Image (cartoon, rainbow, N blue to C red; front, side):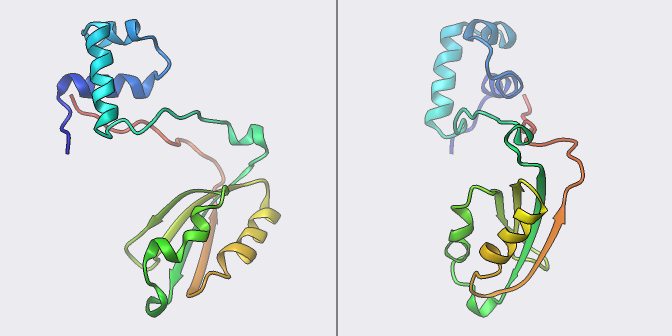
Length: 155
């Protein structure tokens, strides 16, 4: 696995906070030449440290007003490969994040939907029919204070 050095880490820290800056601006902020920055960014991409460049949309502007966290407990005797068990969920646009977890639940999903009626439909028609589901619990977020923040990068 590639281990970023201090300059790489400074680049990553700066890029996360201001991804649309020019190469010249980035170079000034991290005290490297633009060509050095370009080569380092290419190397970070090639080594999988930078996994892409994403466009973030405002969910509310698209009518997605409800964020919910859904925990799912499975019948362990019917739980084969976790990825296969929840493959139908992974393909759904409503599902923003999906994690296998420790503790009393097997999976936690973060979903974004238009309203509570859509959430109810998603739970009854998509989540509950998954073979082996024992229990589903849902928490609706009232307010978001921080979402998809930058990763901690020490340099």
